[in-house]
Image (cartoon, rainbow, N blue to C red; front, side):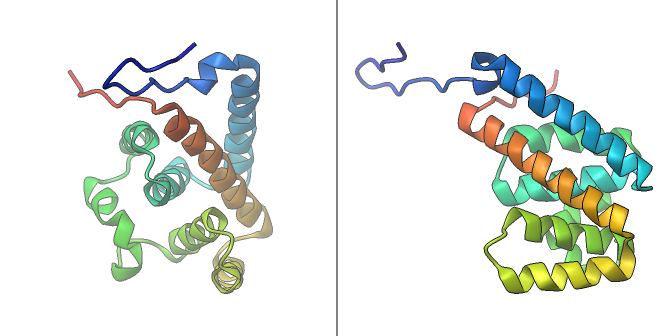
Length: 160
């Protein structure tokens, strides 16, 4: 049992390791979503921008670490990554990217019905229905991974 000793807090349970069948199902979902996104014509940098923006909103350090590396490998620039939290205030993102980011934010914070309507309207102007569906699935999936990593308190270690 994970009981704290005096002056300490218990370590978190890595739920991905504790329940590997459930985690593997989430990984399989992620792989299917990645294929759906590619089939819809979404490039890897756009998918990683969505992963990063959702992870920023959720405050998931581990997913930010993983997806920053993935975005850089996919060809994303450090400039765009640096301003991603303020994407609305720049001209660095295409209409398609802006629509995807807005839709990802609305998916991550679904209680705001007005933001959802605005995001869906913007998405219809810049994305196909297949792309809209893919962006929503990417956002749903990274939201799930964010919860796994946040609740497990997955560590981020310094690069060597």
